[in-house]
Image 1 (cartoon, rainbow, N blue to C red):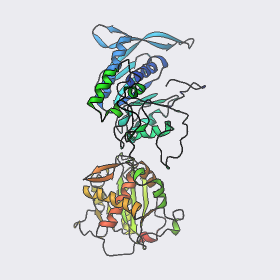
Image 2: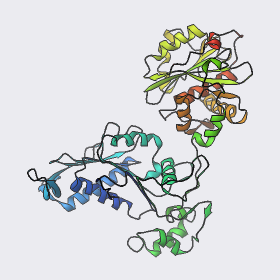
Image 3: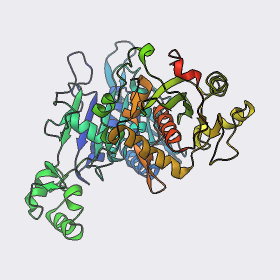
Image 4: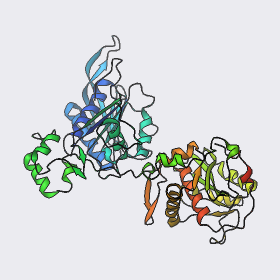
Length: 489
């Protein structure tokens, strides 16, 4: 973990340690954090866990170590300690050992440690989509990576971008289920040449900046290749055996939890279920639905009538307007009309599109980030249909919760089974499809709107639902059919 290259930078920009329960992962992380804090001069170490109570347990363990290393400054003050550390001589620039003041912060939400000579800190946080944003750390420690999501990864990964020699450290036991632990499975494919792969993953290549160690047995929980009743199978993959894990402990665990024992004690992974869109609509399937004239807008056959959909992403950083319509040959075309930062521009733009192209409907959710646009849309004349079963041309149509799940199924069928939905190979929609997971909703499945990139995909899905299910007003030629310069991205 602390190996360095010839230029003094970390050999491992990322480092993974996967090992079964109670084998000392926390001890490794404690040593790494205190080394950076007291010896290496790292200014900010972010230590995150999946739950607040877990982060606080880690904080308490490191606090005990700080106190064991140091001496209390005042008998009545438990939060200020003199601790041995390495400092740099101001005259010679040489390192020397010296006792420094370390302040312990117990404030709720700001738990951590600070060196008062350099301002270096260790902070403990519970992970969230926004947790860590705005902080520029030298080290990010991801404890219990099995509960680490792509959205959380995006929040934390880029905190290191401006640091001169950063490091990202992951520790965990195997994922709980095959449809969780997405970051762990990604790291496994990058670090383990024997990890299961699909054609889309391509061949394994050594990542020169990833340190990877998995103590567990090969195979998966559907293909267990060792005798779980043989204690030697556990001894082989538990480095703490004989130190903190005994033969008696192993035997008791096997009797008490035979179903969970292969994962928890033998380190065997569940077989991956790719619940994100890449496992539902493959990259190859999506490429196959690219309109043949996507590279030549003038040659694209557009729908006679279109539905316009507006969608704000979960972080409110972007708004997307998508058009979906049925073409003369019966196929559907989905295209990005507008995709820009922020939200303020969107209602006026939608009103402009309505005047110019006279769409069948305008579709928007009334809940979540998009719902905040509805009052301004109404002021601009874009209001919900008075008769939801038979809306008029240009009315606002709002999908209900059950219809959100139905929309997902219709979109999936139109792409995968029926192959009637085509797209123009536009980057925002392509990225959304690659990045967006699924979630359970109203007894069905829907796209997970929490990913900031998902808005174009949600808009395309709701547009498909509206075209296929909402009663269509009498046909009328729309200017959209003949406008090949509409898309503004």
